Image (tube, rainbow, N blue to C red; front, side):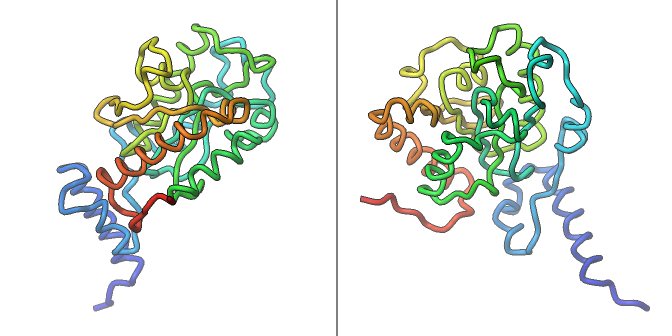
Length: 242
């Protein structure tokens, strides 16, 4: 009788964990904490059907609105498809439109520094925008553009199944929460969307124009990290710098 290979055992373990997750949710038997110890990734189960890559193929060369005629390319999103932390911004800028990846310009570099300050690397989170195409001259998104594009973001969230969402800026927060409240009222409170907590803070691009907002942003980011530790708890202990 041939002994099962390591790959075979890994496959069986992944299948078992996926089944337990489907039946009892991520907390059953502490699966979120057990997976790293087993050397495994979180099973790519999706109640929406199909994974993130399949969803990207499904969207294809989306032309639901007029932004398709002025964009260079659709900017879907980037990062870990099984990320526990998802970050949502407004729309691609010029550099993002050219390279096809969100947050790659100066605001993106600032976002990387902000994440690193609380113990996250870009590669372990998932970053997306509400709009997948750049509005001409970086104007504000139109209501009809948001209505047509928001299902793409919701589809990403349903497939990634993050444990926490960080909304960057008023537009992202209002879109996720289906509200018209100003950013001043949305910050400082933990919101929820379908059971997923949402922390709201300033967009990095706004910080570049208004450095005085960096202190309140730091307060928001620390709140996000504390909440992440409470909800997920898979990272080494972190203490904010004095």
